[in-house]
Amino acid sequence: MEANGAVKTTGPLKGVRVLDWTMWQFGPVSTSMMGDMGAEVIKIEALDGDAGRGLMRASRSGTGLPGDRNAYFETTNRNKKGIAVNLKTQQGRDIIYKLVGSADVFVQNFRQGVAERLGVGYDTLHEINPLLVYGSASGYGPNGPDSALPSFDGCGQARGGLMISATPVGTKVPSRVSGGVSDQIGAIMLCQGVLAALVARHTQGIGQKVDTSHLSANMWLQGLGISMAMMMGVDMGAYERDNPRNALANLYMCKDERWIQLMHLQPDRYWESFMTVMGLEDLISDPRFETMDSRMNHGRELVEALDAAFLTKTFDEWDKIFRSGYDFIYAKVQGITELVDDPQVISNDYITNFDHPTIGPVQMCNHPNIYSETPSGIFREAPELGQHTEEILIDELDYSWDDINDLRDAGVIL
Ligand SMILES: CC(C)(COP(=O)(O)OP(=O)(O)OC[C@H]1O[C@@H](n2cnc3c(N)ncnc32)[C@H](O)[C@@H]1OP(=O)(O)O)[C@@H](O)C(=O)NCCC(=O)NCCS
Image (cartoon, rainbow, N blue to C red):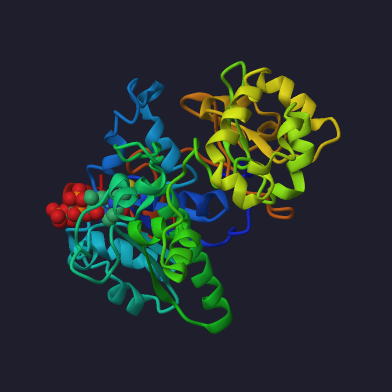
C-alpha cells in the first residue's frame, strides 16, 4: 500500500492503463497478465457481471471460496479494478468514452458484432483515441464463414488440431487437456499482440487493432509441427510410446510407478553411457540397435528392454544415479498438485503467496517471467462487481455524488 491507501505496483507495464471489457477466461487472462506486469487494469462489466463469476463446476468439488469468492474468477481477474456499466445506455457508453481518452489499451472478447452494437467497436474508439491499442479475441478469427461463431476452450483444442496431436496412437477418443489451456494460450498470444502494438505505438506513433483467436493461438502452439508438415507433406504423427522414433526420448515407468520422460534428441551422443547406466551393456553393439535408423526400426524391442530396466529402481534411485556425473536429459512426470513442493518451483517463486483480504493467505501460479528491474507481482485481488465504479467516476471522471445517484436510478451503473 502507498501512503494514500492506493495499491503499490511495480512491473514493466507500470503507467499503462488497460480497459478490460472481457469475460470468462480468454480475454480476462490476457489483461490479468498485463496487471501482473504492473498495468492499471479496469475491468468493465455489465450490471449482472462477467458470466465467469458464476462458473461453479470447473472441478468436481466446485470453485467456491470463503466470502462468496470463486477460484476461477479470482484467478482470471487478479490485479484489476472493476466497474459495472450498462453499455446499452448512452450514459454508460459516455463513461467508457471518457475512460478511453486516457487509456492505452482496450481489450474485448465478445462475439463478433457485439462491440459494434454497443458502441465500443474499434472504429468508434479509434476515433476517440487514435493511439489506442484495441485487442480483440474470437473463436475462429475476424474473417471467414465462422468468424461470428461462439467458442470456448474445447472448441479451440478441437478445431486447432491440438486434441488429435495430444492423442496417443491407438487411442480412439481424442484427448482434451484440462484447465482451459486453449483459452490460456489465446490469452498469452493476445497479451503478446497488445504489447507489440504498444511498442509500435511508441516507435511509429500509431494505434491499431490486434485480433487473436482460439484457432490461431492453438495452431501457433503447434506452429513447428504445422509448418514442418506443410513443408514435408507429412504430419509428424501422434506420440507412440511403445514404438517410438527415438527410444531415448520416451516415457518409462519406474519401480514406484512414477513415470520419467527421457529427452535425448541426440541419441548417439548418449547411447553407450545411457545403456551402461541402465545395465543394458549387452545391447550397445547389438546390430538391431547400432544406428538411429535401426533403433527406430526395432523400437518395440528396445522399449521392452528399457521398460524392464526402469522397473528395477524407483524414480528417486534413478534420479540419484543419473545425477552422479552423467549429463542425461530427463524429467520427472508430475501432477499439478505436486508442483508446490518442487524445489525449482519454490526457488523461482513460480507458485507465489498472496494475502487475499477476504480469503486470507492463498497460493497462486505466478507470472511466468522474472524481470530483473521491474518485478511483476500479484498486487490486488479480483474486484467485486462494480467495486470501483464510484471511485473512478468521482475521482477521475469528475462525476458528482448526485450524478452517481442519477446514473444508478437510470440503470446505468450498479
Ligand atoms: C464467450 C461467448 C461464447 C459468450 O457468448 P454469449 O454469452 O452468447 O455472449 P455474446 O458475446 O454473444 O454477447 C454478450 C452479451 O452481453 C452483453 N453485454 C456485455 N457487456 C455488457 C455491458 N457492459 N452492458 C450491457 N450489455 C453487455 C452484450 O450486449 C451481449 O448481449 P446481447 O446479445 O443481448 O446484446 C462469445 O462471446 C464468444 O464466442 N467470444 C469469443 C471467444 C471467446 O473469447 N470465448 C471465451 C473463451 S473463455
